[in-house]
Length: 320
Image 1 (tube, rainbow, N blue to C red):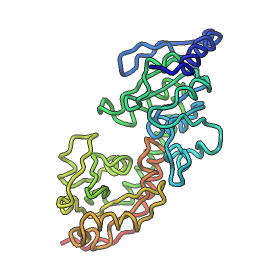
Image 2 (image 1 turned 45 degrees about the horizontal axis):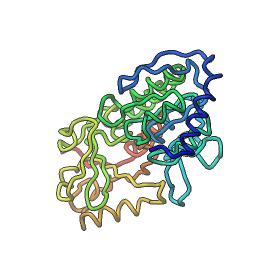
Image 3 (image 1 turned 90 degrees about the vertical axis):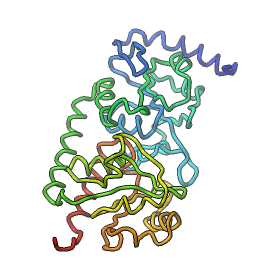
């Protein structure tokens, strides 16, 4: 049941949007099949997932005024990876903190958005959200579309297609450079240790996407996973993740360093390095995860540059 104070706020929100009805609108069909009348030129967007919605919208230059957020390493609320990728975050005071999952509906009502964009992951009920402002639901959970196809949807909603084309062009230039510098016949692998298991994805977020777009090959264990899926695997499969070059990531947003990634692998499987040729030969590369975990073209270009630098400077044994 909606709390009395929240109910009053929702009713007030209904009346507050009446003047906005003069705003030009258009119909949009979201991933739940709902036909929603949305502003043709939204000016006050609330995004209810930080790395899947807020970061892409900020990169597109869309007017985000509020976002889902989560606790950072120091306990303060943050938009995960946003400061690194967009230069914007909760602490700067320009984007309202809506809390985590579910978001705080009273705060959301108070900031008076003209458009709410949410995901199937967010637990705030759509029936309550649409009382506050026109609400679009995007399915980011079922593999309905490639992560970066989301950008085309967001650019359409916000009228920022020109900006998206520039982001795509820059990324393609980075991929072309990576292909010129590195030998794409090199096999690669990417994963991390977590809670005693190995977290394996196909692809491994932006890290895996960059490597795939450049034409690198992955171990069969990864290649045989359905695209867009992940698995938590036991430590015993580690030799099946070996490759010419292995990328392992760590949570910089939690204050972790490369030493933490190494320690997590050692805890998961003591003596792990002896089971990875790449580790024994100095071709295991440890990278911060945040730049590569958000749905972000800026993140893609950062990862592409890092991999161009790394793969262009590694020593490989002579061909047999």
